[in-house]
Image (tube, rainbow over all chains, first blue to last red):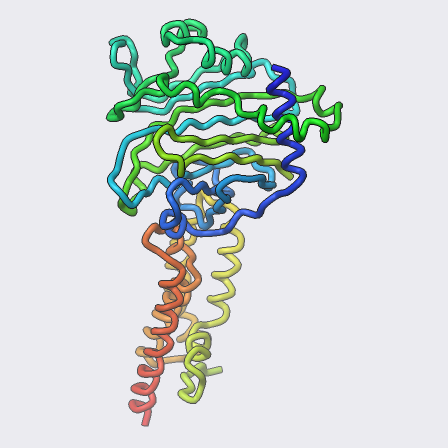
Amino acid sequence: MKRTISASLALLAMVSLSSFAATPTTVGLFYRSASGNVALVPNVTRRENVLSAPQFLQLGESGAHQLRKQDKYWFVVNHRVSGPTEISYLGVEIIKIMNIPLGSPLYLIRNKNWTRSNDPDFDGSKADSRTFTGITQTDFYELHERESQLSNFDAALEGFKWHARPNGASEDSWSRRSLWLPTFDVLSEDFHSRFDPPIEQNANLLLDARLLRFSTTNKLNTENPVVFDVTGANTEAVYIKIFSPDAPEFDRVYFLTFH
Amino acid sequence: MPRQIDVSSHYSEKLVKLIPTEIIGAYIAIEGMVRSNGDVYMQVMVAASIVLLLLVPLYLTIIFRVNNKAQIVVTMLSFLVWIFSMGGPFATQLWYLPVYGSVVLVLWTLIVPLFNYELDQQGD
């Protein structure tokens, strides 16, 4: 836990060092931009209204952004590619630094249309999620590092079957579990000294990890947009890491603070 | 206060002159209010655009005493072109690009004087 806290606080310092402005754009321009681009859709609260919003704020490839405080933030990932389409998934790792004590430090989500090859009891046709009170973020990372059997991982998650294979894809997320190792250590040494100790003492971290199956498209359509939300209530800062096991152009890291 | 077309005006000015400022002002005000609520933006702006479009002939005939039907039609089309160039509800569509609005605006300002010319000839 200490490693995660110190590193996460390091990202707060990083945010304060520099902050980039998002570029206002429209849905049409966004989906004509580079694959993997991410946009924040302001002033929208419901998923079904994301693509009919008057404005998209396109974020840079990675970096720090300061956003106006809202209850909910909707993000869209441009899944339009120029080549052939394929089915894959995005890993979205959201670490929220909250200003209230947390009873549930870990939240796992998997969207719909997932499967498991040798598990007839697995039902991934619908989205599934679980909040964990007894498992910390550190436990979550260590399980990915330590366990070699998916069944053991499931058991450690109190029976919740999170890792799976996107329907139509050849590779499952468990075989690429190394992508879920903590990445904060890279930052912590450089930035830890900049922190104000009282902030560290009061830090409450929530890890919100998501597996989002999606299909790339080479057409201009909005049938299956890649969308995810981040709640802003009681949140001081958010670290968002987006990655794809197959396509590095989808890899992004954002540090968000709110004002 | 008649608002007949002045063929001596510059093309771009004609487009603005054709549209009652009250209509444009109302559109801008509504757009400004709704922009901060993305959940209802498209629906409200489509509805507002239709209502304002229908108000154009009423404003022209009742307030500005324009009785030339061709001019009323051109004014309504000009209002649509102006909305398109601004983006508005069109900007929420995937196919829409801001450059489309700019191109249509330029082309329409070239076309409008042709209507004006014909109107002028009819008036002679």
